Image (cartoon, rainbow, N blue to C red; front, side, top):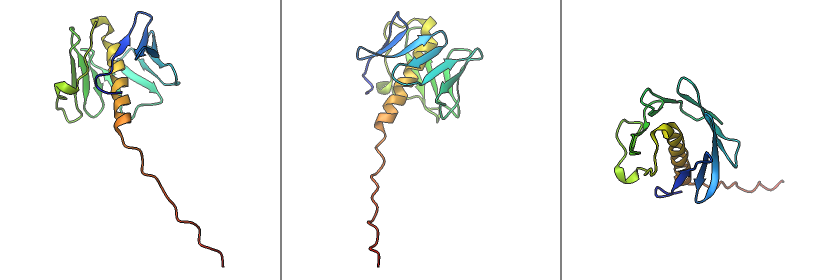
Length: 141
């Protein structure tokens, strides 16, 4: 997935990528369709996931998704996304996703979808591990 890929949250509470349903929202849980992965927002704003994310996530009182150790995903009432890197610097505008048809009451859902998209992009950008080769066993004497 690249930065220009469109993901949609539709009225059926489904998250769609290129027309294919990849996740579903049910109350406070986002369940990925083809995996057993899910994310849930707890009453205190914390986000738990299966499997567990490497860093803790929590929504603050402004509904910004804060990432443990720094970093933040914020969406204003017009759907403008602000991404802050762990070092506290804002991520350049050309890298930011665009949200169309945004509704402020869906801010937390949109934040989780952005997180899903960004972690997918990051996973795809990582180079595969180097191939390992082993020497043939020494001949027996």
